[in-house]
Image (cartoon, rainbow over all chains, first blue to last red; front, side):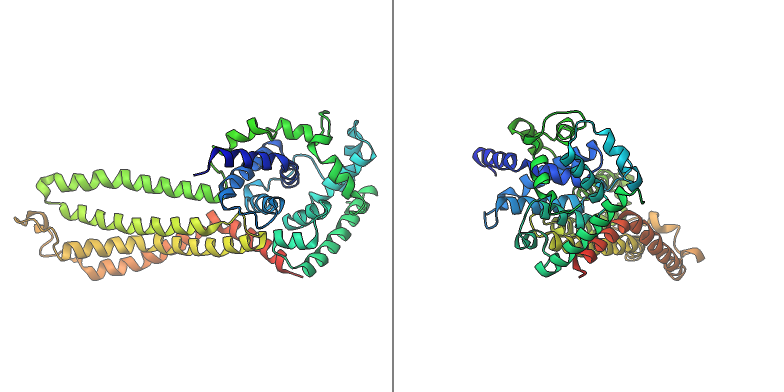
Amino acid sequence: MVSTDQQEAFIRLVDQHRGILHKVCRLYCFTDTDRQDLFQEIVIQLWRSYPGFRGDAKFSTWLYRIALNTAISDLRKQRPPTTSTSPDQLPTELQDIQYSGEKEQQLQLLYTAINRLTEVEKALTMLYLEDRTYQEMEEILGITQNNLRVKMNRIKDKLRKMTKEAAYGIG
Amino acid sequence: MELDNLKVVWQVLEDPLSRGRRPGDPAAEVHAAGMSSGRESLLPLLQQRSRGPVARMRRNLRIELLCIIVAYIPLILFYLVEFQGRLRAISLLLILVGALFCAYYYRKSRLLTTMQCPACQVRSNLARQVGTLKRYTRFYLLASTIVIPAMAILTYAIFHLRLFYPGDGIVYHRLSPAPWWASPTLWLLMLVPLTVGMYYFNAWYINRLYGRHIKKLQELLREMDEE
């Protein structure tokens, strides 16, 4: 039985780390409904697992594990995007974002490219962008650091290629 | 675009607090989609039930159990009480099948409990899911295939051994002496193709239910392992 104090502590912790949950939902889902479903599912799984959290690992590491496990395993979420991510349409899409500055456009471009990666590659890219060390990545994903480095280099090449193709309208 | 150059952009722009509420803004989308945080929005989520694949499987299993209980208990009572208790053998048969189902339910429920470990490393959780799901489907295939021959053999045993045999013998009178079609050998011979047919049908059905899921999990696992 979880006490009210524990419940409050849990809510405080999740609230502090909500950015991670939003990023995972954004990376793994294409529609608002799917994002909402995934967000709820992650919070439910976090709450269920919370009594088992002993603080051996950092809260963020524990949270990443549960969020990524839920996002990757819950295969209902793998629905096609509602908007096209075809590289030759990227410039038009980007032009439509009136408010965005250069950096936001870059981020949008990055998201579009990440959407074409596999579930595992998405997880790696996200942890890399979050500036997690390879040791932390290993703790979260269970992949050896050497293998992580190899994979990360491949992903960087892949993203570079994708965005270059998008810029030149090659698809 | 260099990934390393985007780290700062990602970390700053993707923080929901750092973003405004402009139309089309991902952070605004997040809030519109009901993903806003804070005590008030998180609290109701804690009371909600999971809608993940394992939770759905568990729910289906409970429905299966409920259907069996709803269908079997009245039938068992009916054959115990009606016809002056002369068809109690059918009740016994249903009780035995019900007991087999309980074992089936227990085994499946145990497998579902161990299927997921959300707080484990992603790779080990995937490996656990693949292993348990394979065991689950193997057991499902075995249990759903043997149910018909098991029922047939139980029926034969109950009637052959005349368990709960009514004193006046009227019930089984017409089957004695047994006509040609009541020959156990004939029934046994018919059971073989039926069981084989059931096996292939169940294999197809289970593959339809879980095949894609297992394949996808295996692909993810393979991708994580390859160097």
